[in-house]
Length: 309
Image (cartoon, rainbow, N blue to C red; front, top):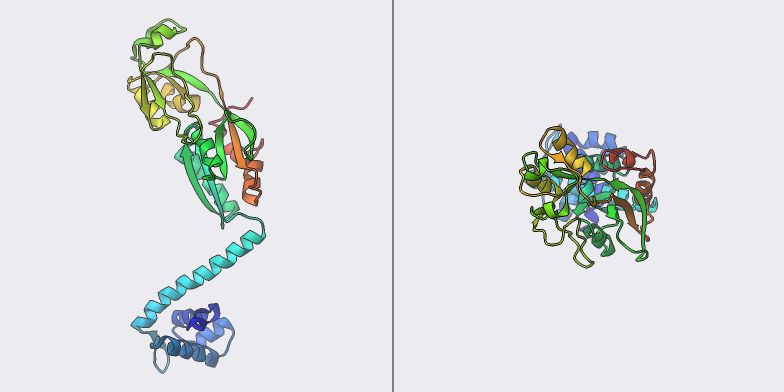
């Protein structure tokens, strides 16, 4: 029975079913009508079912034939996918790429644009996107959960079989609600004033390496939230204070939902790196590296999030 499920047999069967005619299927495939008829009869014998009801001028699928037609289409799609996969591998294109994006650079819009240009360039590559916070990005690539990290923080020592290059920096602004008690206090705000209010913090998601603390004063209360969008909303509601990425606070400041204030010992820019496993040398990985260079497609996509010197 295994010999029934060849690409040629399945193609003959599905073409005959689609045209409702052995002769039209023969013309479509460039073979004789008797060859199509013989193939179908051999398949029916092997399956021990009748696939078509034969009429004088046409053929119709039986209930078993209709079921087999759906499965045959799936098998043909699998055949084609395997062929594309083999061709892809032979060209040095990865069959799958796992990308971890730092939450500081993660937005649905930017990620959708990233996927759009990648799928256009490499339609056969399966792309998986995850997001982590701070050293959780390094954790992901070190533990082989990702092949590529976009926005790995500048905190890891050299080595470990990881290649990386700087792609820009995140600039921080100290932002609070306009009706917060500190909004009208003289600048720069002193640490003694800041300690009186909770700091809204996003916890580092690293599990196997040391967690990074973004900004927290000694003795200050911390409120942990899962992501930077939640942090931003908490600060808009006046539930706490802290630094936000400039690109995230920008719209809220323009709309009067947040105000920025100067403090002593302001938070330094966070350098963002593009990190890849040293062994990752496929075309997709190389293309991503190229497109994060100046004037690259990916540099353009993330241009409004990253500051470049």
